[in-house]
Image (cartoon, rainbow, N blue to C red; front, top):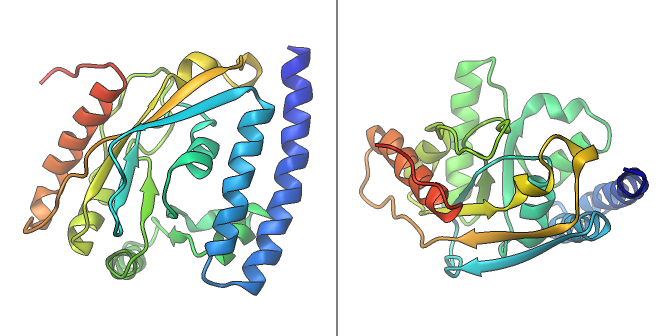
Length: 235
């Protein structure tokens, strides 16, 4: 426990320092590329401080834009993706996060995609703009389960991210984050050092698919992610 508390204090300092750096860099480079490089460093520093080793294995990432869909079991998932997903990407998030100091400013200046779910028309318009950005070359990473699971069982994947991939006509890359929950079973204070794996699966094409296929695509990708995590889902 004392080791975890000390590590968490260091992580707070690292996050504050690099968060401010991201904001300053974002003011100078509105493309978001330099901000992404800084947040990639943040992810690796945080995980190193916490004693978490990450291996990346599996298929090569597509050369063009894609939607990367990963399971979501803990707070470690975010630094894992930012630190080790081998592509530059943006995330889709709630617009209300813009109100949070440092984090919100980084998300805005880094070019991430904010959605106002309380206003359906505005959300559809922003998603349509997001689809155009993705089609033009911006990859995104998503957690289709929506919220973190209490255990490591893969929950139902929501269709919205997959509809976005179909609208942008880009592939979906299933990503299995393996072994994370075993390192942090019941919150950050239960964290123990260890190894996790970021397993990339072959891209799933959306070419020629209609929007009605989004739900079936979500389930197909969920099953791939689950198998990569060593889970077999019932039909």
